Image 1: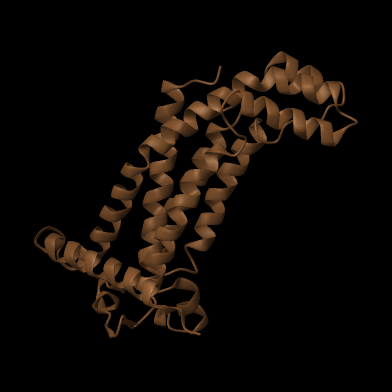
Image 2: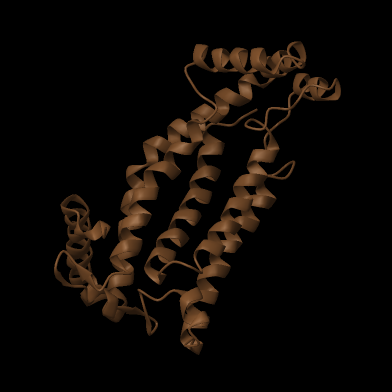
Length: 262
């Protein structure tokens, strides 16, 4: 079954298409031929702005987890040979504090449908029974529906395609490198390790992977994975990813200053 034939899916894609086309027409006097790309960027910024309260809640949750680190270390020391009791005690501690270990996942979960819709809009020639004029829109001469991987494997990669995607992927990877450096000890996003947590690890207790610097390094690695994903999605979706990762990095820096962990 073609998912596009389902009325709810077709309605969502058609609404997204019409909204992007409307923004494109509004931006044409300023952006010219890159108006559709500018519309995608504007949509990304609007989505990220709407998620600012979620980002603030995430920063507060991170600060709470950092504050709980010594108590978590004590639980790990006490129940290091009883994984079930350790899990139950850990979740109870988070519940008592009104937070969860997974509070930072919400922004990614909220954005997933948006990325999916943009992806679908720029890979289908027909949407809700009408033609998709967005596929004819370009950025620096490269159609917004172009995928680097598909173009290369098809043998049709031009200099313009390689250049545009090269800049896009490099810009996303740069965020990954900045995130990795910021997560190193002394960096702007580094997680302070309380003495109690260090003593528990030295005593053989398993560290909490959700509260340590390893998670911060994983977030940096995730940005590198995003650069890889950008090679396989349409250029329009790659633009969404580019704006998102830079926004996320800048927002984390600002909120970490507002809500320091230590």
